[in-house]
Length: 590
Image 1 (cartoon, helix red, strand yellow):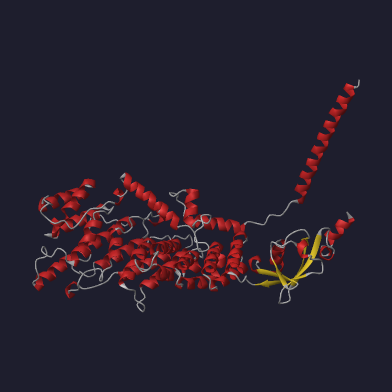
Image 2 (cartoon, one colour):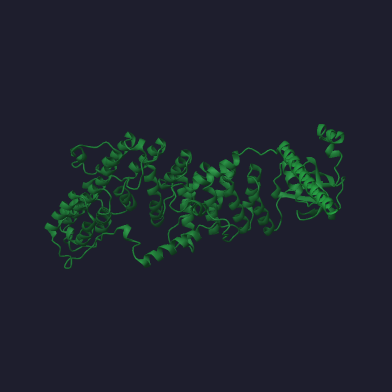
C-alpha cells in the first residue's frame, strides 16, 4: 500500500518508473514538442494515437510515426519493434502519400469526436488531385457539421469542380454547416442546378443540390434561413451576370416557391425580405404602351405562385392575423393592379372586408386572375387596332398559352372558391375564347361543392352551351389527387420512391455505400416517411446532445463495492458447498 500511495501522491513517478509489463516511450515532433507515454509492451502501436492527440493536439488520422528512420504503422506490435524506455518516436503531422491510404485514414475519422483540429486536417485533403480523396474529405466534413464551418469557403470551391459527383458532395456538405453554408446557397444553385440536357446524370445532382438548398430554408435557426434567402435573392437580381433563358427558368421554378413560403416565416426579418423581393419582382408596364405579353414580361412561375399563394402554408396561431403579412399581401395586390389605374382599388368595394392573412392571400390570387384577364383583353385590343385576323382564328397565339392557360387550368384547381369563381367569370367575359374551355369547366364542375361557383358555371354553360365536340378544346382540368389511383400508377409511384431513395444514398469514396444513408433516408427509416419532424432538426438535436453530454467519470467506489459483494457471495457459496460435502461424508461413515 505504501508503494501504491507513493504513485498516487506523486503521479509523475509513473513516467520515470514504468509499471510491470509497460514501456515508457518518448514522442517528439519536428518542432521540438515532446511527451512521454506509458504503453503496454505487448500491445500494438495504435494505443499511442489517442495519447499523442491529447498531449500534442495532433489528430490521430494525420499522425505518421517514425522510429529509428523507418515508419511504423498502427497494426505493428511494440514487442516486435523491440522498443524500450530509451526509444524515441517522431510524430509527423501529414497525410500518407497514396490516395488509398488517405481514404482509409479518412474512414477512421468517423469514429472520432469532431474537433477544429480534425476539421482543418480533413480540409487539407480538398486540395488533393485525386477525386476519391476529395469525395471522402467532403463526406467527413459534412458529418462534422458546425465544426467544419470555418472551411465553408474551401468546400464552396468544390462546386466548380469538373466532376459532377464532387459538386454534388460539396452541396451536401455545405447543407450541414448552417449559416456558414447558407451563404453559398447561390453558388450551389448556379453551379449544380443547370438546365436539362447539360450533362449526363443532371437529375441526380440537381436533386441533391435542391435538397441542400431546401435544408437551409427549413433550418430551425432564423439566421440560416435569412442568409440563404439573401444569397438566392442576390443571384436572381444579379444583372451583371445574366443567366440564359433555360437557366433562369430552372432557377425561378425552384427558388420562387421557397421565397413565397418564406413570406409566411415566423421570423419578421425573413418575412420583410421575402415581401420586398416579391413586390420588386413584379414587372410594371403601362397598358397604353402596347408591350407584348408573355413569360419574358411576367415569369410563369411567379404567376403560378400567386395563383396558389398561401394555400400550402400552415400558419401558426400568432400569425393568422399578423398585420405585417396582411399589408405585404395588399402591397402585392396593388402592384398587380398598378398597370390599370382605372381598375385599381377594386378590392375596396368588397362587402365585409376581412383582415385575416387567409383573406389577404386570397386577395393576391384574385388580383393575379384579374391581371391575366386584363392583359389578355389588351392583347385582343392590339389585334383589333393592327387589323390582324380575328383572335378566334389565331388560337395558337402565344398570349393564349401564356395568359389563359395558367388562369384557366391553375385557377380552376385552386383551393379558394373565390379564385375558381373569378376564373370562370373571366372565361365568360373573354368571348369567344370561353368556348375552348368547355371540357375543363365540365370536369371542374363534377368536383365543385361551392354554391357561388356552381351558379357562375351555370351562367358559363348558358352562354357557350355544352357542344365541345365541334369546338377545339385548348384547356384541360387536372387534379393532382387523381395521379395515383390505378394499380399501374401505384406501382410506378413505388418504383419512383425506390429510385429516389437510391439517389439519396450518400456518395462516400467514389461509390454508393448503403451503410451511410443520407439525412432524409435515415430519418424516414427511424420515424417514417409521414413523420412531422424535420430530418435536419432530428440530426441537429442528436449532434447537440452528443457535444453537450458531460464526460463520464469512472466511479471507483461503486466498482469496489460490487467487487467486494461478488467476492462475499462466492465465499458463502463455497462455504455452503463445503458444508454439504462434509455432512454427506459424515453421514456415509457414521
